Length: 124
Image (tube, rainbow, N blue to C red; front, side, top):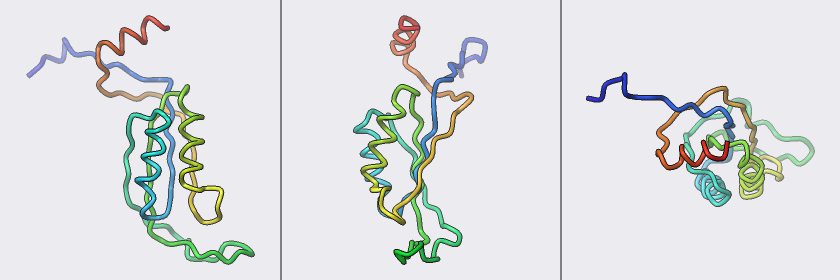
C-alpha cells in the first residue's frame, strides 16, 4: 500500500458541473453529444419527478415522471461548447423535453496523468 506521505492530491478549480435532466431514454444521446463536444465522460442516473404530470401551459403537453439525470464535469473553457451541444442534441428548446443548468465547483479531484499535469503547468 502506498504511503500517504508520497501521495499528492491535484485539485481542479477551474471546472463546472453541467446537470441535464431529460426524459427517460435520452441520457445516452446527451452523453454522446457531450463527448462529441470534448467532455471526457458523464454520470447518468435515473430519477422520478414531482408534480410533472401536470399539463404545461396552453400546449397541453404531458411530461413523463421518469427522468434521466446526466452530470458532466467540464473545464471552464469547454463549458459553452458542451452546454450548447447537449442542449441541441436533447432538443431542450421543445416544451417538456428537459432542463439543464451549470454549477460552479469550488474544488474537484481525480487522477490526472503526469503528462497532462506538466502540460497544464507549462500553459499556466
